[in-house]
Length: 124
Image (tube, rainbow, N blue to C red):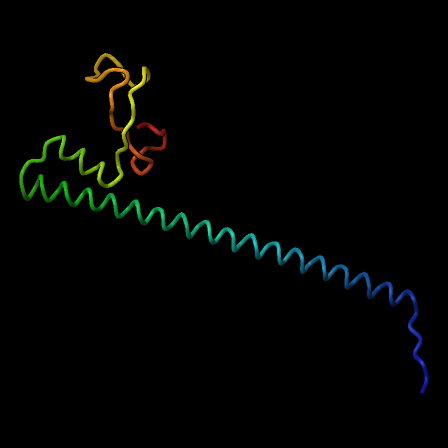
């Protein structure tokens, strides 16, 4: 039996190819982890939006049933329904909340839109 001789340059070439393949594998693993994390974030956001959608549907159904097919709801009843569905949240009025048309004063308990109902400009 004869021993095979492998030239050192061949060994160095193999090492370099293995190193490059290992780098590719690391990049693929990092990319896969990123995609999984992104998928998890999208899934969580989708769940949040589904929950918000259900709240808004329930609010719309209740108001339509009462206003169109039942009896007239007053502002207090609509506000109470919105609070129950977490569409409004309590807030203590500050100077920035009060203007000449306000029917409340600084320090009064008022209600503001939750994130579900805030517009893109975050008015509330």
